Image 1: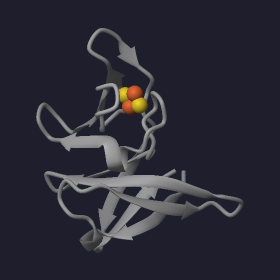
Image 2: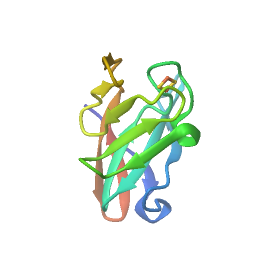
Image 3: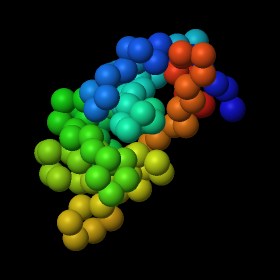
Image 4: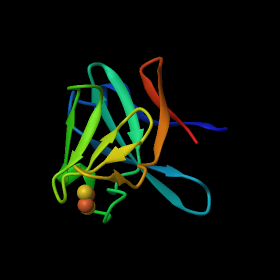
Length: 110
Ligand code: FES
């Protein structure tokens, strides 16, 4: 598993998502970063339900654990493990990555 630097910690503002791109050599992988309660989470930037951008349509909250609520169809995903739910059923899993903050930099494990 590779650990790749994606941002400076100071770029992240509490509760405000930021999309970064990881150069994989043959393509750029978009990763959405969000700082909540001082923790940094990394995830795929598009809602796993119908692919609307979570940077625009996601509401990030710490209530009941770090979550993102997509305002398009009101799916809710846990930022720790990517598990998701709609009101009455399970939602497709959100891809998440482990984020590590070290020496003022944010790394994601891919
Ligand atoms: S597109 Fe996000 S819940 Fe449907």
